[in-house]
Length: 634
Ligand code: SER
Image (cartoon, rainbow, N blue to C red; front, side, top):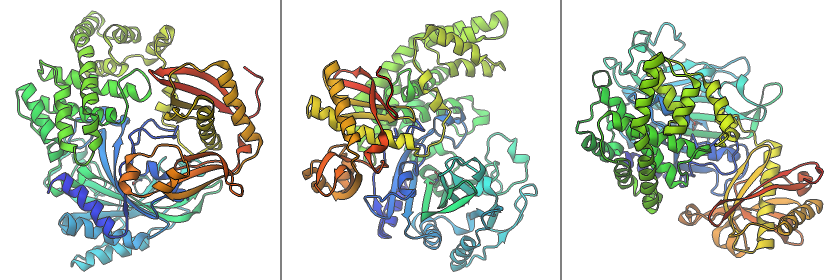
């Protein structure tokens, strides 16, 4: 069974159970200021888990592209990748624990044929506020019982290890899920709930974690020795954090997320993710350019690490570029640059002489062409961006490495100033120097690097620094107000500049909105003032905001603007349209396709003010604006 077969079987299985198949959202979240990338399947679903109506109903299934920048340096072992696909099914206030457990069991054991004797599950042990999840335990027992397995639930201690049993209780660190982890870390309003995870047993003789540190610890299903791999997590998203503890969400939701590649590893009974079929084409290319075969045996083969970094990073870069992220020194683009440069460096280590990034990317386009046609559509861009970046870095890399060695030889250390010079002269990202130093057992002073960096002020990464810390989203009032302001701005721009104006990008933080749109010229002061005036007049009119769920044609015929992407067309499905204006008169100041959320009334915005208008690319302008109490004009 190929990985594509598993993806297809999953989507179809849940479609048979009444789920609507939706296509993956972009790797770059829209209107979510809290994170640079889509890092899990549930992320685009958060508004719906919090109670917004989803245009496709209450049962949804998908395979979501995910990218986790925080894992860049984890790549190298048998199972970490920065890019992965997360299979997800959602009940938005529809079915709950019983159905989820029995469907999952059926899917794993019947559809993809995993041997139930090698499946194990974990459930929430409970804490002082929320009880132990006995209900879920009951459903697992039923499911295992139906195939003749007496599934015992075991209260065990992680210190003693696994002993016997099939269902294991863990506390909130392992079996509670929210975007911010354990209950005490959750901000007010954040949704979360107990979960139940499923594990595949690779076999007790296969302590496959390649660093043996864990292999000597007592083994249990959720330990790190590598014997068990987690293949999916069923989150019962039913609570919301309050001042005093938790309250039930308006609806009881199921949020399932399972790594597609991990399932494939279980199906193949092979713990090395990099040998699953999705990597076959690309792996061959790396074998060719490095003149050596891939080996899964990390401890005996120094090239294994490099192979994995190259395979992972170039796949992630391929998908990110397809979603519009080009290598740069800012925000998301910085990561793409770092991925490519890291791949080039590891290619250099295993003896790649000629340019290879484009070749590896082409192999991925071929592999994923059916599931992700956007790769085919963007193939030329992907290859040209990779090739450009590779060439740019390659010439500096060898010189920079020599310089690094020289610096190191001189003083057995590398300073923050050196790191900055390597950055400026050879394009070494900070992390590369840090990594090279670490390989030599050295630490580089980041503060010094940063202050050098600020001094030179040639990059504007500072603004995105806050995002790198991954603060958590709450759909805070500020963000929601700015989101509504974005719609009003969009329409006002079309009124003032013309209907050639379309959204080209949007990013909102608690402080400001940033809106990119198509328009060839710099806006005049009069135009800017006119746009502000229109928005402020509509704020002053205290217009109500509401949404309707419409089919595509109705939405278009009613003049809704916004991104009607292929996803909707493909679904032939329904979309959500937000209207600003009085329903009674049917006169609207804005009609836009959008997932929400928005304010209820424009008066909540108080006052709208444009703080910047600037170019971003040929034919694209950018506006930054704020809302809130009137400020003295600036
Ligand atoms: N929310 C869970 C996760 O992201 C399951 O989708 O892992």
